[in-house]
Length: 110
Image (tube, rainbow, N blue to C red; front, side, top):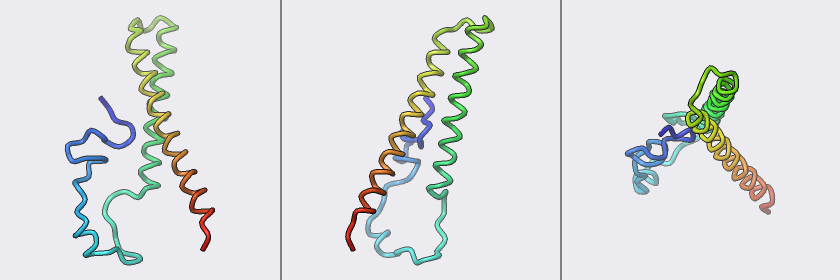
């Protein structure tokens, strides 16, 4: 099954990352301007939004094909629709968590 949000079921843990080692993270703090390998959060979110958009387009095409008679597998159309719905709900949940985090940081007193 395809994971539209980040390879949760990967063999190395969430997003295909290995286990974090707190000692190694503390021993080498990131200096400002240091190079970090991998995608940035924004790039990852853009990729996931593109994936959600692709899944929704596939579900739309599948539903149109079913109605037009070019397709006769109702199960496949339902599966495509549920995949798109689940992916959208996941992105919406991430967005809501980001908004909550922003509101919390905004309300901090310094």
